[in-house]
Image (cartoon, rainbow, N blue to C red; front, side, top):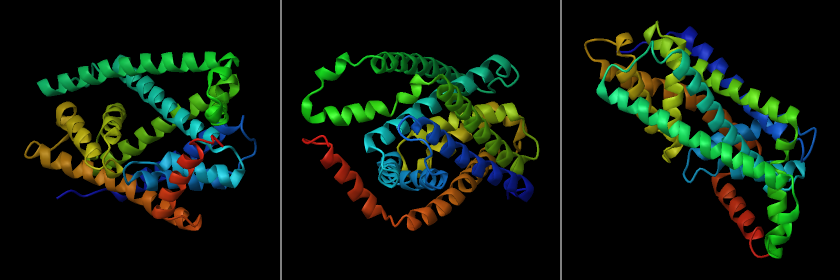
Length: 309
């Protein structure tokens, strides 16, 4: 039976709180071109609301929270949604950069202990390169578009206003200081998530390298991206793969698979339940329900239809 060290669990909870605060701060930085002085309380509460709503497919947390923030702060909703999209782009880049750091400095120290581990590592490395190239190209094209207004006249009149408001949500890319701050916050966010995972694994194993948590972070991102409720199943599956095929030396020789499954389930519960509970409280404080959020997104789709208003 697994036993968790409460001190490491407490440390992980502190990193979870820091993670949420950093995400809220980055959201505010990306929205500065649309409005300065956005309430930090609104940013924090709606960052947590995103996570609650994303538990249920089709994961419209970003859209729902963006619509509520737009209404509270009187910002065009497409601009806020675009900033949320940019957040996800920065997340992808930050994870790839950190994974690249792991490959360069630590991969040789923690080689896969199985053929399947080798296949997993090569596949993740290959897809990371592809995603990095695609995202970099997309950002380059976007920055070129933002520097010109010639393309505006090509947009059909009924949707022009909506498209231009959406483009305004990427205006932070014009500011060197905003880009630098958002980039640093993105790396910090994923290092804090790594530290959170490291503390949780240490709570069960007692000894585990921080570099190992870098690889676990990169692999579990793939699992969470699978469209299951709250990422459940995908997170545990990829964490199991990491522990069994890369770090078996730290597991019990008698039954490493059961131990890895117990650790991954424990890490998921501690990572998600506190955020979900606090997020539900904020959801209630905002006067929102899941039915209301569904209606909110439908109303937004209607407004973005023929009128483009």
